[in-house]
Image 1 (cartoon, rainbow over the protein chains, first blue to last red):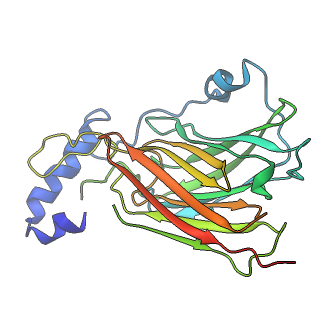
Image 2: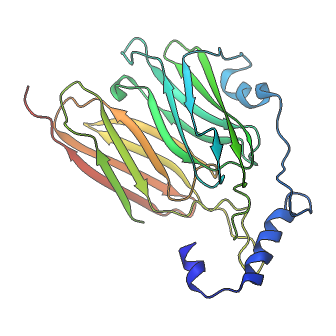
Length: 158
Length: 107
């Protein structure tokens, strides 16, 4: 994006880009759709084979309020000893409001030493983010964090 | 593609080390339009892998939900002095890698 800034674009051209992005979601400049997927089962079922993950052991840490959805720090901490017989195998980050709900998937193991992953995510508006975790015994766990996003990641073209 | 990798210190055998990785990449979502109004094609780093001491210690599949210039922080248990090598590939087939040596002092 720094390149774009260097090309001497006018404000009008920039706005054109913004509107084009917004119109993708249904025509209005304020639109932040796609709609929220209220049913989490829809998102986690492909991983858990239909089972409901237990709401325990997983801590998702994000700022409560993000000024901007383009880059929101997010870390996931799982309560696990990370031993060969008891460790985290997989961490999946899910969003219920992004056009692509699967943000990322990580595979860990006892060699990780600590069941913790941090990254920066894009969020298309205020929503809950879920971390879905599979442990070595084949069980699924989840933790959620709610993030208030004042400006969606969709308004990227500016 | 430039990248940076950092390890927490000190490194001690059997004590988790924090690895911080930053890769320079736009992570184009495919939802963005350029200033002429044409859609910018999606191009994200879709897979990333970290190897250390003959073993894959982290595998990641990333999507457009990861912010531009992806940052990743993970942990690993140092057992022996060896190279930590992180490789990734984007959807245009451009691959990148960075490595650093983990020096484990004798106990």
